[in-house]
Image (tube, rainbow, N blue to C red; front, side, top):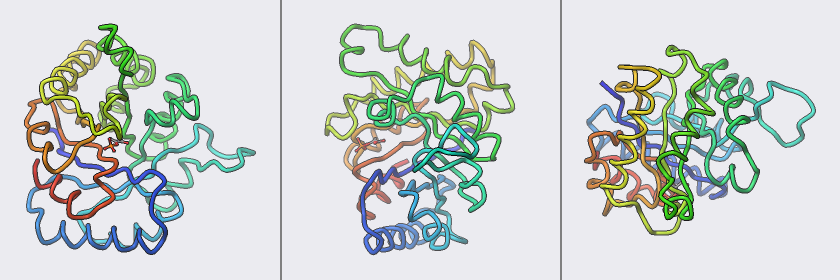
Length: 251
Ligand code: PEP
């Protein structure tokens, strides 16, 4: 059975006090209201990871980082390594978010290296993929997104791939309020699973594929109903506890 996962990506938001309030509220609401075995993850800014790990200790809420370096250590000012995240017991890390691809020019090849180092350090990569509006309008979106998987994940062994979570996030739906329709999400997820199956066979059925892009309490249920949609990566709506937990509950 594939895991159902809802992960919040806080991006570069919240000061320490706000972060404490948000994390505590999510922990309490999840404890009282989420009876399923849905995995709930909060991907906080690096500076709050330690505190967030303490706040969520013993709860059903897991913590993730939003990025890691492809290097293990060295003269990379400002970077955070996978061994550092491992050393504080962070379980998840987002890799290849479209904002990192766009603003920090992260390439498929570099992301393959990030996936490797995350796995070597027992972190679970939430690997993001997705096309721009221009690519979708050109009709090339399936090939484009499948190629992102090929170039960043297909070097992995089956044992390694099994640990990866994939998040399909069409760039035109991120933070725009414009979500993909439930049909568009399901259609892409099905293609991605078939693409995984072309290399990894039945293992493709075990890989959780999350949808991300303007998921809100009001549209989550419809999107999550797709048979290949195994949860969501939530940006803006993860910054408010009530809405985020309502999204979790709509799985
Ligand atoms: C994201 O940044 O991963 C995301 C899905 O953002 P939003 O939900 O705000 O569109």
